[in-house]
Image 1 (cartoon, protein in one colour):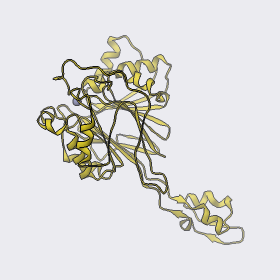
Image 2 (tube, rainbow, N blue to C red):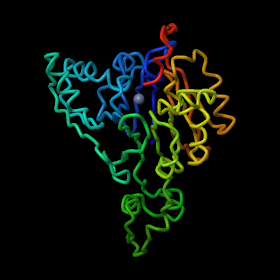
Image 3 (tube, helix red, strand yellow):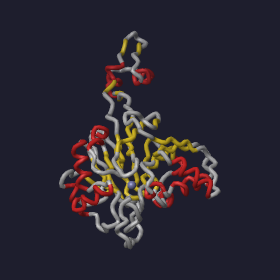
Image 4 (cartoon, protein in one colour):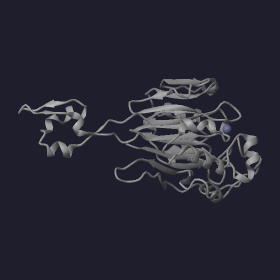
Length: 336
Ligand SMILES: [Zn+2]
């Protein structure tokens, strides 16, 4: 299996140049996860044809508006569209009050159960969400208000059954299910076959780390060591590292430095300031330090997979044309 992540928004603070506030739709084993929910996220989900019906959980990093102002609209629309399945929402302290207040004041009503978990002083070694195939861990980020990132990590996979060897040894296929489960089998002729002879080590588990918003912080590194794909705040270029420090954001170079130190395979840059129309410099700056870097632009979909016999690579394709660019009027308000 693989992860598929579609970028719904890559802008910081305000929409700019066709880039929207933060949001990503992640798919794994046919289950959907939304990470952050800036304004108009539900429109981006429609535009990029994301399977909202499969949405199981929403993960919110922090309460700055460009990461949460799309929540009420999305939650309401799902209710209007007759969603009945329960939904999990995990976010910082205050997220419950934010939702309850908005739902009440807008006279909205949710037809489904919304299970909210607020993270206060999270233990970064403990999963905050689990499925049969996946664990999600909070990540320590450093921002101006309490903020956590999220690591999506597959649970260890099963050992791989070597069917060709079993056929070669004339093991009847009716015994394969036992061997696959690690159980030895006795054949009709009395021959005993050992499961371990037909099981190969499993493929390594895949992982995706979402780290925005954050200043440069090496305390993050132990938790994302060896991650397949890292999405990291790259609000500014290195020329504005003072501004990055002041606003608790990162530069493209700092994102690349974290990727390099953490030994990840691929880096995605995002959360771009509205002061930059063109983002080529972000890419050049980061690739000078960490070559395997891509821009995580609105509408791009990245596959995190490991096809047998091929090296890992996140592929990218533009699902749809971004909207016409608009020039922001106040570029001082470019980073929340
Ligand atoms: Zn922020």
